[in-house]
Structures are given as structure tokens and as C-alpha cells.
Length: 193
Image (cartoon, rainbow, N blue to C red; front, side, top):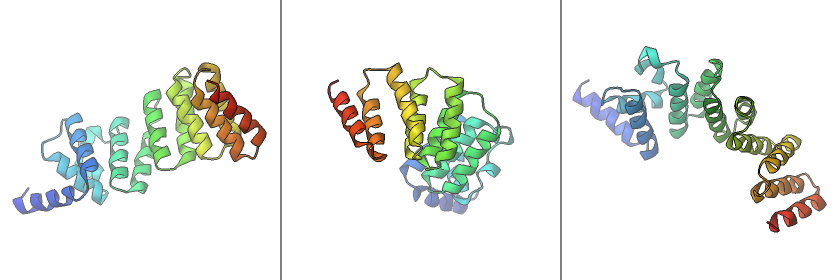
């Protein structure tokens, strides 16, 4: 790569912001790419060509696709981020952690229906993991699927009766759906904890 091209790539990479640069460097380290690869990855992400610069053997890895989705999100390319997440889901992952991470990324992109689908699968594979169940309840609530959110939060209360946050969320749902008496009762119950 010529010095002039490298300087242009470096200027473009520096304009992306620290979060995007840090994620690209971490990606390069994680996948044992050349030292210059972080800058190339950043430019490729910016241009929508990340799949071209990555080694062929890693292009379909769910973990790499998830990293790329995060990078695309960091540089503001929501469409490319969703495409990479869709690619992860097309690999039919069975790992609950990957499914939860994909659901979390979809959620942060406000693609709630896909977040819910991914998180439901994560909960199916690992039903005792409270963080997955919490994320699913939160996704239901954000999508305004209030009855599903209520059921999810009630199940969380059964699993962890001392967690007042779940009761507050139930009260918030009651409030948002116009069930004020139930909301007040739940707020009072949470306040007694």
C-alpha cells in the first residue's frame, strides 16, 4: 500500500471516532490480522466493503459477523449492521450467548421484532439465564407487546422475588396500558421492598 493511500485511509479512519477505531483494532487483534488491518477494516466498513478485506475463512463466522454489525452500527450504517445480523441468524446459531448478543444488537438498532425472535431463541436454549429473560422482557416492552412483557416480567419476579426493578417495570406497563389502579398497587409493592 502506498504512503499516500495509507495516509488517506488513516485520515478517514481518524474521522470515524474513537469507539469505531477501538472496535476495529479489537477486531484485527481478535482475528490475528495484519497490523494495518484495523485501518483497512475501518475504511471497508465505511465503504460497505468489509467482507472483501477479511480472510475468506472468517467471513461467515457468527462471531465476526456480530463484530462487523457492531462496527457498522458504530459508524452509523444501520442497514449494513442489520444485514450482518441477518447473516448471523441465517447460520442458524444454537449458541445462546450468540443469540442473545444478536438480539441485543437488533434491540439497540430498534429492530424489535428481530430482537424478540433472537432473544426468544436464546431463552429457549438457556431458560435459566436471567439476563436473557430480562432482555426479552425489555424488548417486548419496547415493541409495545405489553401482554408478553407482563408475562415475562411476572416470570422474572417468580425467579427473583426480591428484585424491585421487575415490579417497577410491571407497574410501568400497567400505567402505559391505562390500568392505573394496578400500576399504583405495583408501585407501592415495589416501594415496600
